[in-house]
Length: 376
Ligand code: GAL
Picture 1 (cartoon, rainbow, N blue to C red):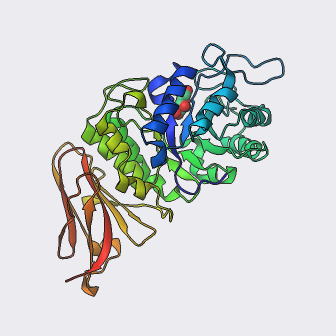
Picture 2: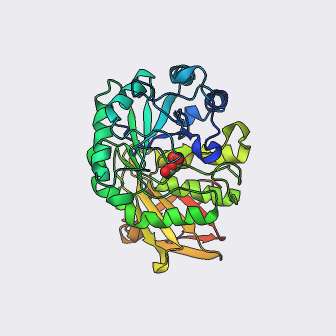
Picture 3: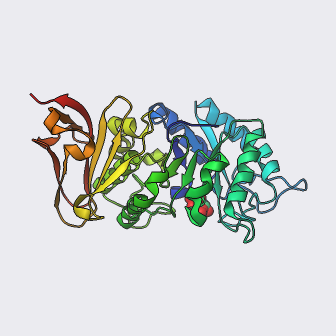
């Protein structure tokens, strides 16, 4: 299945780890529908690792844990679908999943059939305990083909963390998104590290197969499975803005049943969602202000001719960042300039002659959706 813009949804792992069950999944589906998240584009509800029994059944099929999912997975899928959402599940290219449940190695086709029989719409496919002999590209090719042949449209979400040069072969497999980096944690350092890693990886982003920068930590506030220290709301704003400018899939990872208004406002910011989901899917580019990794300026040209421009201060001190409009392809000497407002605050871009700039506190950003206009 081809999804032409970055997939959006919610995933159980960041907050719940192995503590998943039918009740909290149903409640999450309710909130996705009722809070407006679904209508903003968050359409996939994905159950991550730890949903099955530790053994396959006598026919070699995966079995949902009856204590966690007493009505089985088809019933969960039916409930999720009844809320106007799509249903995602998880497996692994190795013998076991990362948490030690059965993986799909040498069961790829039967597992794809099983997922199809439960009306699954999305499969996240991890890379733990994979064969030391078979290269990852063969394992992901297999599951890609198994899904294409299972009789149902199932979006393939590859999760090999960028290992074994994933970027070189992942687009062969039919994956719609690929985890380009290791796991996110709910800390500022983790956000900063994942943004920095895109410097080398963002050229591999592309229509229909997006660099997945991992599930969002917005709103976790140190709670849950990857909770750790937590971040401030300003740091979560920067995190969300970077994922949107870099065209990442957006999979919410907090417990949305307890989401604050601030968290919801970040996750549903209309300007940032319009940038992430821009239909043109142009590749972003990154300018390093002053040649320094702490001050990326991330840019993406949008479908209607607008320019998305983000100034990021990843350092621990205040900073003034600026960029000549000519560097963005907007020639001042031809009487062209950029105008527009900031995504979170609505303030107008600071543009003096041919230069655009932002004064930023530590760990903050400003992101603008700009139009090209004529100089007065
Ligand atoms: C990791 C993966 C995480 C989560 C976890 C489950 O490999 O990157 O996103 O799925 O496994 O055990």
